[in-house]
Length: 576
View 1 (cartoon, one colour):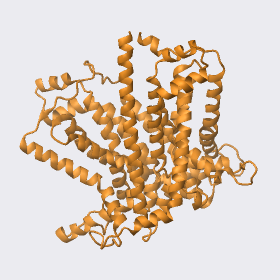
View 2 (view 1 turned 90 degrees about the vertical axis):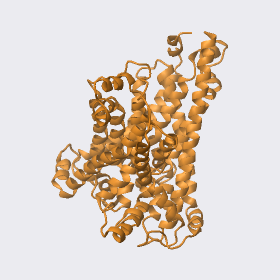
View 3 (view 1 turned 60 degrees about the vertical axis):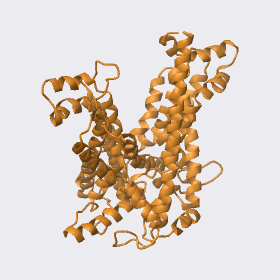
C-alpha cells in the first residue's frame, strides 16, 4: 500500500465534520478569540467616550514606572536566555560529543527543573542563595564577601534561567544529534578543531534547535507572573498588569495596554525565531544526519567534563533540594541548614490545603478531558476531512501558546464579569468552571499535538473498511479510531493535567474565593508568610511529585504509542 493512499483524507458528504468544526470554533471563539480581542479593543479605547485612541499607549510610555517595567521585562528575559544557554550548551555538547558513563542519567536530571514551576522554588532559592542564605553565609565565613544572587532582578533571572534552560537543552541536543557528520569531518580535514570547530561548524549547524529553545525561554520568562510576585519584584510587565487589574479594577486601561504588549512580544519572539531560520540552509546530506562523531575522553578531559556537569546540575537542582529541606525544616533563618527537622508540615499541608488539592484534581482533570475531546475533534477534522478552512482551525487552537495566562485571565474578567450564570445572579467570571475553561484553553496546544500524533498512527484504510461493512462515521470513530488512539490520548491528557495542575498566571486572576482556589494559588498564599513556608514547601513537594508522576506516565504512554506505530508499520509493510 502506497504512502499516498495511507495519507489521503477520508471523503464523506455528511454535515457531521462541519458541525464538529463549528462547535470547536464556537468554543475557541468564545473562550480564546473574544477575550483576547476584547483586551486589545479596550487597550485602544478611550475610557470615557469609548472611541478609538492611542492615548493609553502614550500614557504608558510617559510613565517612568511602566517604562522601567518594560525594560526590566526585556532585560530579564534576555539575560535569562544568556544564563540558560550557559547551563544548556555544555550539557548538550558533552552528552552528544563524548562517550562517558552516566550520560543518560545526566540528561534525565537536567530535565527535572521543568517539572517544578519556577515560583514554587523561588522561596527555596532565597534560603539557599539569598543575602542571608546558605551559600552567602558560607562565603562570608570563608572568604569575607558575598554575591547578590537573589537581589532584585538578579533573583528573577537566576530562578527563571534555572527552570527554563531545559527548553534549550532539549532542542539543541536534538539538533546536534541530527548534524551531518561529514560536515564536521570536512572541517577537521581543513585544520579546524576544538572551540574553533564548535564555533564555525558545529554550533551554526545546530542553530535551528538553539533558536527554537531560546525563543521559547524568552517568551516564558517575559510572560511569567508568579516568580516576580513571590520575589517581590513588581517592576515588570506581567506583575504590573496583575496589580493594575486587581487593585484598581477591570476598567483600568493600563492593564490592557500591558496585556497587548505581552501578546506582541510573545508573537515577536516566535517571529524572530522564524526570521533567524529564513534564507539559511541547515540541511544535511545524510539521512538522519549521523550526529556528531563521538570520541572517548582522556582522563584529565573526563575529570574536567564531570566537574562542569556536576557544577551545573548542582545549581539547577538546588531549588528541589531547598524545597525538600524547607518542607522538613522547623526553623530555617540565618543558618546554613534548618535548625531542626519535622514532618508536621506535611500533616498541615494535607489538612489545611486539602481543598486546594481536591480542586486541582477536579479542575486539571476536567481541563484534560476537555482538551482531549477538542484535540481529537480538531485533529480528525484537519487530517481526515476536506472541511474548508480546516487548517485555520489548527492555527486557532495553537495560537493559545502566544497568549500569556495573565492576559487570558484579564480578558475573562472583562468579558464574563457582566455575564451571569443561568438561574443565578453570580457573574460567570467568579464561577469555578471558568477556571477549568481557562486551564483547558491554555493547555489545548499540548494535548492537540498528542492527539495529532496518535491519529497519524491510525491508517485511513481501517476506517474505510469499517464503513464498507456498514458502520456509520460516528460508530467508526468511536469503535475503531478512538481505541487505536488510546495511548496517545492518555499521554495528551496526562500532559494537559500535569501542566494545568501548577498553572498560576491565569488562575490567580480568576479565583474569587479560597474555597474555589486550586493548588498553585494555595502555594502562592502559603509562601506569602514565614509561618506558611514550611507547609507551602510540603505542598510544593507534593505538586512536584504529582507533576513528576504525570510526566513519567506521559512518557510511558508515548513510548507505547511509538511501539504500536512501529508494529503497525511493520504489519502494513508485510501486507504490502
